[in-house]
Length: 625
Image (tube, rainbow, N blue to C red; front, side, top):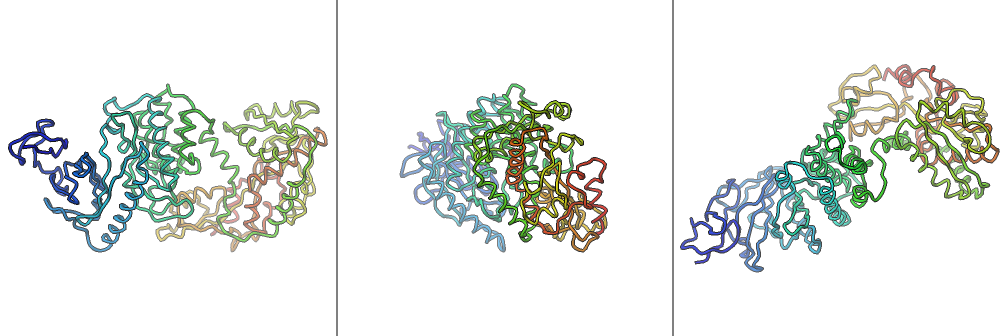
């Protein structure tokens, strides 16, 4: 008689069913499953699916081979079996759900599992996503019927190839997965479990993404409680927190880590450990792929490091962006360049303190908007000289100038960057008149040069009340700050906060060992990462020694006195645009109308190296919190 093998699912001739050996694969019919809680082969589900042996299993599900009696094809059936919530007696079909809170969590998970099946079925027309044919409830849990894929997982293929793949093959596989993620993300779904285990290299040459068991609908606007599901080495930091904002960038990290593993033969360091290393200033333990595989091109080296940036905003935002980068279709900035840009554009992230917007803020922006409506500047070229202490800084300033050049199409901005060692000598050579002379230059470390033009604050800030505390009553300044640094009070609102206090201890506070500390608002993002959801920010001046909040300027620029009147006016206008582009002034004024510079010093005096350090200022004024 003909018997269907419970392993290969093919028919063979045998005298008896139980105990016979398949003549095609050698499997013995009736062999019990490897784990006692697995369903036994030979069970008929829904009077349609003849269950075979287990293909794979994990913490949330079991995948079986099966034969579809209606369609006459081999399928894969995934059973929802979260081991933390359920169990099964050996040989039985019905699952046993643990009582109490776990029962409710299981039901919520089952609902999500069936919703995942229903929505994944919508992608059946896409060749690179595993097809879902059917889903149903039985035995107290849920089942998903999928196509049975022949081939090997990327994990298996890596093992066969000695643990590493050529970089060009890795890019080809990765680009295929990026195409899949584009479709999935556009439907509002995150995979959340991308790794070599869940990428299938099919025998027909296709690359398929499967196992959406950890998938959830993305919510890009709000934070949500999420089950912590991850694979060590492939999960970004946000996936370690049950309350987190996850998005396409979460899958991009995992795919970047997967490609990293393929090229280097190394599983990347766990992202939470990487965070600790960076926080403790020991250096990120994630080595560049090129350190293990010197043959890979620089663009791919940069793209993979960018995809695995610890901070989500530094990663690629979409799968197509990532694909363009790994295929070298678009030039991208390195993580170090983005961090520099982030420090410039978000130096005053203190807006999260949610304090009232002042009248001064409105006045400054009314002035800026009036400036935007000035429709004409005579044709000229603004030549800018900067000291480039971080690669790519020139590109940052160029990007900050784009809106300006759109509003003034007859004016161009040329930015020249030299090393810090060569900067002062280069500056002195280019402060003359005529072609090639600089109009605007970075003056934070330039010393007192007679070629600095005195700038009327009204040209930058207008007639708003802001000028009386931003410029400390001075009518003219030589150096204009593009950013500001303000001390604020951070407080740990969690129950586990340490009780250390009485001294300014920012590092102890970030480790959770101090209840409160006063230090710079420019480190706000470190607090956000170190103490998510358990911190508060407020004005440091209240109830402390100082009655007014103090600040100091950062990133000073000056205008060349020897430049033509037109070039000086254009340079001042560009400075105003940079301020708007960076939004630092707005965020500063958003903090408080009581702002005054430290001890009445002017912005340019605060730049001098012989002044007290800002950390010392925090300790002296706000040490007793």
